[in-house]
Amino acid sequence: MVTLDLLITRAASKKGPVVAVASAADRAVLEAVSGAIAKGIASFLLYDDENRLKMLIKTEFPHLLEDENISIHHADDGVQAANLSVKAVSSGWAHVVMKGNVATSIILKAVLNGEYGLRTGKVLSHVAAFEVPGYDRLLFVTDAAMNIAPDLEAKAQIIRNAVATAHACGVKEPIVAPLAAIETINPIMTPTTDAASLVVMNRRGQITGCIVDGPLALDNAVSEQAAIQKGITSDTAGKADILVVPNIEAGNILYKSLMYFANAKVGAVIQGAKAPIVLTSRADSAESKLYSLALAILSVK
Amino acid sequence: MVTLDLLITRAASKKGPVVAVASAADRAVLEAVSGAIAKGIASFLLYDDENRLKMLIKTEFPHLLEDENISIHHADDGVQAANLSVKAVSSGWAHVVMKGNVATSIILKAVLNGEYGLRTGKVLSHVAAFEVPGYDRLLFVTDAAMNIAPDLEAKAQIIRNAVATAHACGVKEPIVAPLAAIETINPIMTPTTDAASLVVMNRRGQITGCIVDGPLALDNAVSEQAAIQKGITSDTAGKADILVVPNIEAGNILYKSLMYFANAKVGAVIQGAKAPIVLTSRADSAESKLYSLALAILSVK
Image 1 (cartoon, chains in turn blue, yellow):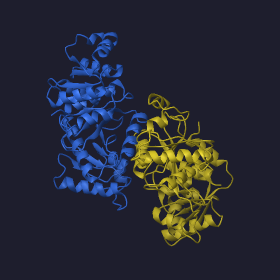
Image 2 (cartoon, helix red, strand yellow):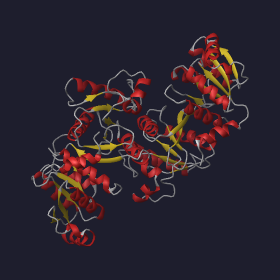
Image 3 (cartoon, each protein chain N blue to C red):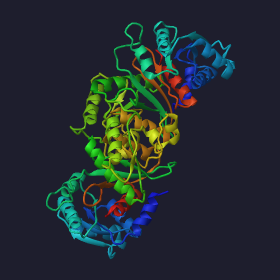
Image 4 (cartoon, rainbow over the protein chains, first blue to last red):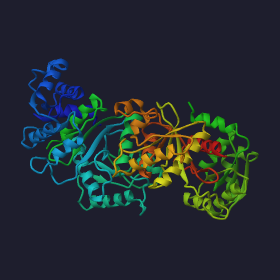
């Protein structure tokens, strides 16, 4: 089984990945940076007010001061830090953008900048990789954080982004389950009809590198026994690698439910831009930030 | 803490509740009936083909044959069984309708019949009561199964139905959290604006007997620590008794996540009609059916 710790080990074997951190002068952010360096998974370009950042490192992370895996770059404020981080990636000096102590909207604005940003024309989407006690594989959930109510076209790209992430994690032909409240088609429930279209898009080569099987309710997606009990005839039901949620509320609730009630571990990354983006939040544990960095580094093309 | 087993104990102390079962000639249904009688929580009117039902009881549940808590009534088919069960309740002979081996749509059609049905003009909604390992109170989730995309008016009634259920379970002034993906108001995310309206409806006396606090993401609704970390100033955040999901997909996913990943126990009931309705499915455990019956019996006015 691919575990999140295995992703860290694999990320450590990648040669020379560099992460650009926007607004790095933050205890929790530097803790993640320090952890990643200790695991040998990346080196870092840190953007923030130079004096403040150096002072913080000196007092709280003195072992990083002379570390060759860190270079400090001045930015006047969060906007400039975001722009410089993104430019570092578009210039090829770095491979991953990481959000420090700056608003997500500022990072995304820099990422989407037409001149020096990281646009590809594709939908950006959030891909989370969960290790859930009792489930026998890594469980990817998408999109729990970026797209509010994706239409069919957006869902197709959300799946492509997640499939690329799964491949990067060593899951060769992931089983993708577009989730709905039921496993049959009901014309007034868009998640069911969208799921049908996604299944056929997969058969017709519009979505590749995976097997799409849906609509499925969550139980039929993750439990073979539940699928059998429902009379669902499918080789893939109950074995989902990737759960595609129909809307941001369903995704956010699933994400939080796995974290708070199922004691799952998670790493997450934004995909669809020219480079992976790590948007960790204050509520994330240091461990979770490390998993996110590993996921991003493995996703670097 | 109110547990589901405590609900069974309390239901057993209610005097004389009678449950009308539509299409009872089914092993799993009779197992639930047998369990409920053993716990002393109800007596049953069983509707189905008389010969088939008697034969099944004789071979599989012989101890029920002479049980005074059971009476058998002939119905030609599922539609008649549903109609007779509903009529038994509207006539006052029974207090709860239970779905046996018949389609949910047939039961609901009988319930909504204008002549002998159980309509109140209110929205019917599904209320599930979960016992989640690690959570210090019964957690009600609504509506995970009936209303696909409820509007504000429907959500208000869904809350009233859930609050009545919580009261019936001994939860005096439940804390109600309308869930969204974020805890701030975003005009393009209806779950957040609806939550704001529901909060004010509660303050203005349009929704009573509870404290409504939202929008909240699931983590802020069930974890005080997460709420504090997010800077949410509220006496009720993190202590939700009732989680109101924004749509059926989010609800179904939360329901299944609690069952499959968090090892939760659950009972559920349909509220809003003149009497509680129990819609158990084949996938429910015998224990879960018993909890649903207890929930329904406690909800009888």
